[in-house]
Length: 83
Image 1 (cartoon, rainbow, N blue to C red):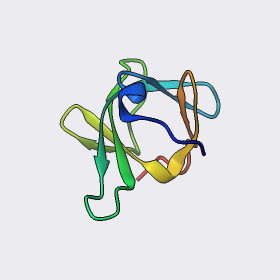
Image 2 (cartoon, rainbow, N blue to C red):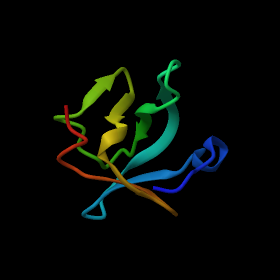
Image 3 (spheres, rainbow, N blue to C red):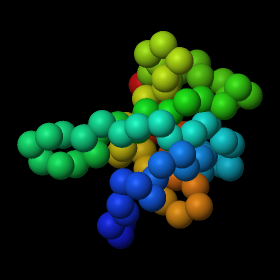
């Protein structure tokens, strides 16, 4: 994957590999020792079924390992993104 600057990710839409919009990126969690992105924090779309996903309040968390592509959307593997 090519390098992406954090400001380029701000408010990007998150989509599954099947084309279903999950929501909008709100923040990221980074390992402060390695600098690697660990999780995406997402504000879920009202039409998205969040059952099976890790939720804390109104925030949905997806492990960065589920990310398949970052361009116009951040595309995640639906199965890897679940708890």
